[in-house]
Length: 205
Image 1 (cartoon, one colour):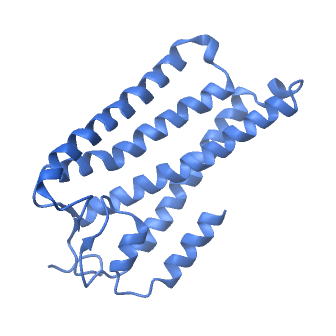
Image 2 (image 1 turned 90 degrees about the vertical axis):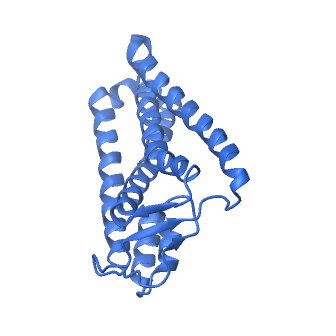
């Protein structure tokens, strides 16, 4: 292993779901079908909402962004997971792991805050129906969505940088099917208390 980014690890090994060869192909088929259904379903929803003017309302505006985020989140994990089900060497580069952790974290955080925004939208529609259209204007909806994306991606930048500032000098085997914070922290030979504290704080916000 070569030294890079203050670590001796240049790649990680993703253990995935199972090490039994006879299960690899069936799992690949199952998850490929699920992934394709996810892509087609979310893409179809986005196109339908954009094509039908009757669906140009705050609720469907947020729903189209939720579909887009689901599509992107699945695509940040799915392709590599499917590839690893077909090959014997289930590795991911250091930079690839960094990118996967960043994008999966960004989209998952954004999705959580978008769901909260959608709940607020429904609350306003039910509890304040007379002034709902005056409050939830197109501009307000855009600003809420921009705020959600901004926080999600900014939070992921901070969390990803904190993770990869740690040193990984022991095992490089990730007991998971993609790069995520919990399994990565167990591999670090650095003090992870600061990272865990920051993760807890951002999770509570």
